[in-house]
Image 1: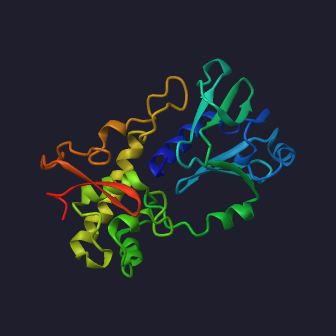
Image 2: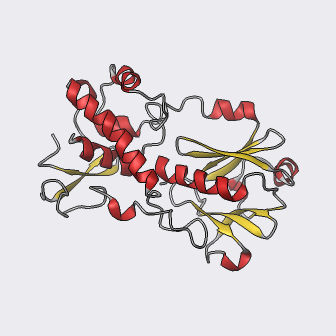
Length: 269
């Protein structure tokens, strides 16, 4: 599932491609991918300009000139491609937004969706999401305040979107490896130095992943050299039995809260 770095990469690249561009056509091949009737969706979205592309946690938000918003969650297996019809991937497209002779294809939305919301409804929809960990105002003091009463395991806490926005299974493993903390350790058992390392690792891993374009397999457009650059830079996630990049011990895999979790049993404590 795309996490914060992947959605941030999409946001930055789409801002370059579709900002102030007018939606000239809409194709909906899967009605469950939207939350309103096709007629209403087209009435509110067709011929509208994209005024901004934003990210909140794992969501992408397309703000239209009439004040309406499109809220995208790719969920498991979802991705996007932007280009001309000749370049369209040979994959099933659930939703297509057209901008003249270019199209934004939403692919793999079996669980994902593109919902049409008013600005007020959007605010309600995302109001319970936690702080943005890459925000400039997300300081160590803010972090220490939000973790002081936490008692769950490290892994499940990082996955909780009400705790922090945008971290999922993959980057929780990367963060805990970087912080040298075991995923099953309890939050309320952390020492002060552990907390500082955890905070610094959250910042470092997410920013490093964004700079490398996240892990997505497919490019956003032809010639896209940014998307997916972090895929081969993973320290620990999906690296079972491979040598730890810090101590060379084999990476282990366990299941925590029904999630495959990867860690080093030697240098994570």
